[in-house]
Amino acid sequence: MERSEALHDLVLRSLDDDKAVEIVSIPLAGKSNIADHMVIASGRSTRQVASMAQKLSERIKRELGRAVRVEGLPVADWVLIDADDVIVHLFRPEVRSFYNLERMWAFEERAPEERRPTAAAGG
Image (cartoon, rainbow, N blue to C red; front, side, top):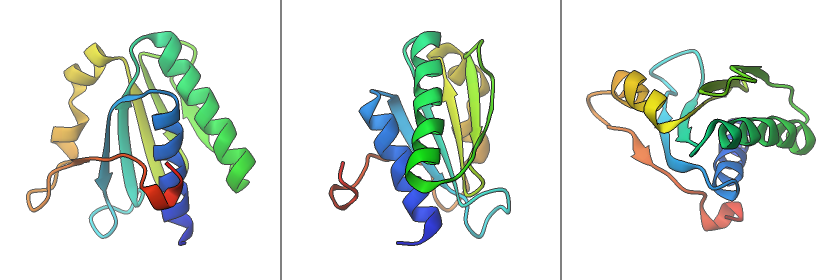
């Protein structure tokens, strides 16, 4: 599995394991040079958002040996995790509605898709 896809699948599995809400994956490959994927998800509270961010960054380092940059802690209304090939935005629902990144990053030919881990990815 390609490095970017392995990271993407790990992100989706981790967020699903942590009960993230409304997980959306936006493919960016060939459309932007910032990353191959952008994943947007919500937590029900700042505590859940912070916990998901911490667990995800630790899991990426442990399982893939990659360091990530995390912004937005400890406030945790909106946490950005930059893992190079995958950018993750974790929000409280009200903050997510306000910024509406899905609409901003949707490309005309293909809208964002709600995505869960695939069975092949162990999810």
